[in-house]
Length: 493
Image (cartoon, rainbow, N blue to C red; front, side, top):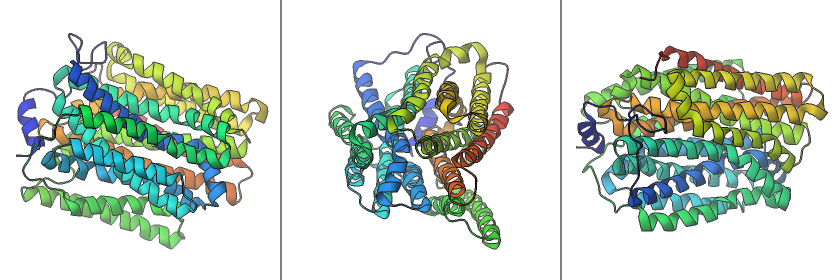
């Protein structure tokens, strides 16, 4: 029996993630962690912060990476998106190996790989060396994050599990928001060449400290399944499907090539669905559990998370490039423009459960509407406002964007996991993270490619390129908003 099946027996007849209450936990008495639980949660949050910070801190330094290494637009896309791609593809096999071998030493191994290749990335002297280091960083991050999800599911139950998952989501959101300000400070202090290298080295002390704490405080490995299905064919199809969606943005084909790419992506999607059904009928466990695909709230909520996450990290990247290349701001100036997003997200995340308690599930569509409005306002400001007032206007839009992210991220994740079928509760979190990371890889490739090609091939200025890229992000957020309204009910149920 797999760990997912064991958890389904334990969770039969109840929601795997109860409805949140005023404190962000399940309704009723506040959930409290014992001393051992607090130590485990601290290790998981530390590793989550370290691995997720790496993606966002690079955004502000990407212009310096490009200039120092003389990287092409395609190589820049691989440097940024390759991390998310490898991260996402490592999550499910990592989680299933954790079921068989136990989680502690896979956690340690994944964090060691991530930390080691972070140090290697800082020494890169060619774009493809950095691409390779980023791919291996992402694989290590995916392995460690899959063990975090499993460890939280194993160690905590009921209200404490809800609160632990909420804190993990909050950590991820805050690390994403804090990355650009931290990167700006490093670049401002050390200069462009050394500064971008320090953005990679930033992960090393965090990683080493978390490694020591993990060895000491994580529970000993206790395999929960004798056998596991890695579904390598399913994983390969997902990888090729994601690459097929990314490549046209990294290296645009002609009209005939674009049609061939589109047909190939559709064919791969059909093959993936057919394979997953066949694998499930054979009695094995496919990459995507059939019960998850049948759960309408889970499927829609995951799609909302994909659209929101992909457009969010892509929008942050093109904003940083525009501020550095288009407006000529220093790294510190760029950090000051993005800082309101980090502050607002921290405050909004802290208060989001109270908002959910008051307004129910409508909180997520409201956050998406605010996010879309912030993107459109930013595009309008860049298109029409004079350069001397643009940093201040964009800082205001970042304040709104950070508030929106705080209202969206943790509440929507809790909603999605709460509606995961009991028989798939053990893999639901891994699938959700994998979907987000794959969406991030595609979103970054598409939007950054759009921005970089526009600045190089004919649009008037960086302003036009930024406006076009931001409108693309707004369209993705509008799609998420439309989907989120499909699941809106008068109360959080």
